[in-house]
Image 1 (cartoon, helix red, strand yellow):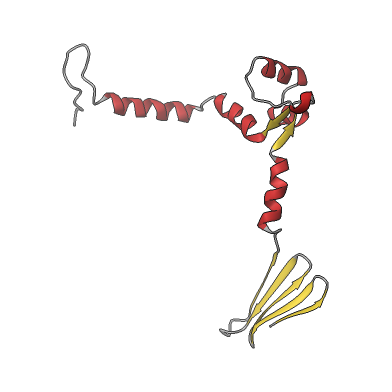
Image 2: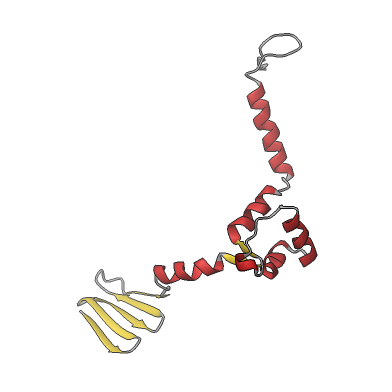
Length: 146
């Protein structure tokens, strides 16, 4: 049974030993159905639809936002755009706009691997090369066992 006390405050009685109390953006849960006297609370999140609507506009970035994200000057960003290194949009001939996914793709394409990445790539290539014939002797690679 849910009782609305007033705007933003409600009590939802689930049984004679458990209930939820909502006050503003917080929910409190009280349960003694197992004799453990459980009490918990959490902050209520915005509904999924509202979050998705807000995210649509967060995906669009201005030149200033991109400069901050990439830690580059506006001149450098202008050069990236002129050299077609980064995708941008210019609706109605106005200011340049960027989709966050395009900026992230630019970052991924300009990744510098760590030593661990290089070592892993080397080991992967080494494993692959074991199945190819040795070009000098014409023999198939066989691993030596101790």
